Amino acid sequence: MFPDIIKKIPARDYKIDGLEVHVDHTPISTIYFVRAEKEVVFPLHAHAAQWTIVVSGSCTFTANGESKTYSAGETYFIPAGLKHQITLHAGYSEFDYVDDPLDGEIGAKKFD
Image (cartoon, rainbow, N blue to C red; front, top):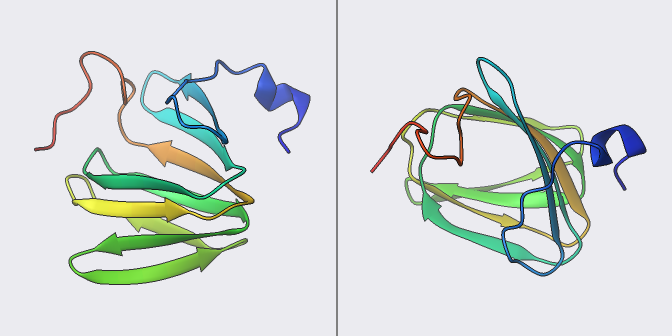
């Protein structure tokens, strides 16, 4: 699904079958390219502010007891520290911009 220029970006192994994630850290942010061949459920979590563009398929985002499904061409914003859960449906892909240059690494912003 991803073009070769994205496949050059280092992959992060979440140890989840059917999930492909490429991560690029910049001096001010972290950029993710995510693809799910199968349904993937991420449990309740929080992190720095994130803006997501849905490239293909759909996902279901749940926060504060409310769920919303986003499809290809839509975007959504997650405020920093908002506890949320997300389900990526089979065939889903997205681009994420996270307001933390160390997101997912040692030294990343902490949100409990």
